[in-house]
Figure 1 (tube, rainbow, N blue to C red):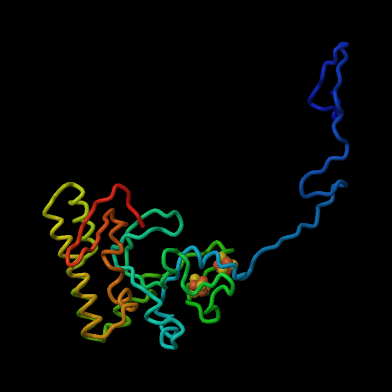
Figure 2 (cartoon, rainbow, N blue to C red):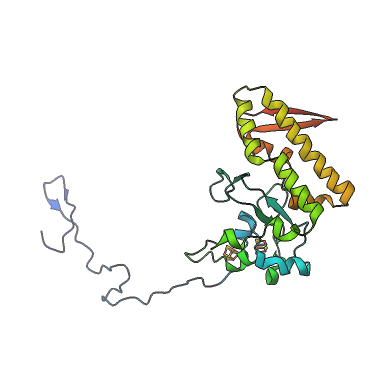
Length: 262
Ligand code: SF4
Ligand code: SF4
């Protein structure tokens, strides 16, 4: 077989063999037909196009370097909430549940979504010139998209309220009485039919609810600021742990679900 012949042959009814010729003018990818390298066009992204894809996927963690944004009122205490250490959360990447290894303060998402509350579908980021550090440093086009030194750089409730004695004590008492590690243990016990854990879970939920009310009534703290001071309520996060808790008057009804829900 000559070099110009195809690897295929067809035997026709009269016994003749038809072997199509290879196309003579073939090209190799990246080269012109005369063998010269093609001029390649690269459209490498080098800056944020403000497409909003990352703003819809998750909300940013606040760092200590972002305190000036809070001081200037660009971001207020109502715009952020706390993820407590040990809290069960859903990964924004694979939607798998995991436990947060540290306390984090994040911008709130739009209710019922993962979209940052500063994102507008028409305008994009409404605080773009003053967006938090993590948003400024995030380069979706780059290989290095992780936040370095998060443990030391992250904003904490202590860095915001450590000098306000009453609030500091309220946070400490809440952590002591509504520890998320303990809550997870009790839920596990409940799933193993240990009935005494129901009472302990109910006590925890009652404490969580009453201290929120106390902050509002006694310290005139607005409802929207409570998720920053105490994190999300146990009632709100319970479905992630496989519990549905309903309030009926002064009573709570606790149901164990088959599937863990967001
Ligand atoms: S960082 Fe990337 S994903 Fe996020 S808004 Fe900018 S271009 Fe879009
Ligand atoms: S602050 Fe702005 S840039 Fe950052 S996630 Fe929210 S909308 Fe996007």
